[in-house]
Picture 1 (cartoon, rainbow, N blue to C red):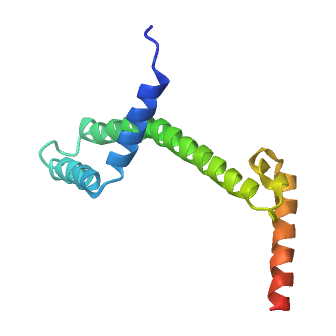
Picture 2: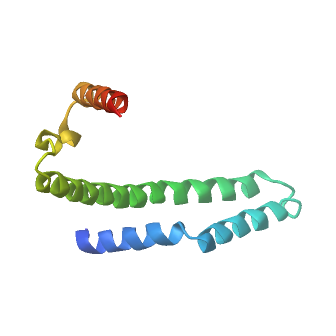
Length: 126
């Protein structure tokens, strides 16, 4: 089995995610559905006719989930690194939040509550 180059996959997934998010891609998908819908009477709305759209959309959706997830995970990781750098650069920033994405749900909820309480306190001061 051929080994998939992670760099090539990253490039492919980024380009594909971008392309499928364009208005042109939406128009192509819409046109495909309209063409499929208008051929219904021609095929007497048969099971095979319905199976074509069901199978097509299932396959496309299945593959797109992996491509979009790859792109979003990469973007999120890059965003965390950028935010971590900003936090480290600010003298008054609490650097204990740098790796907060690795915290438990309970720890994140506690930090969220602390942030909310701080915001309420600051609002009262103003």
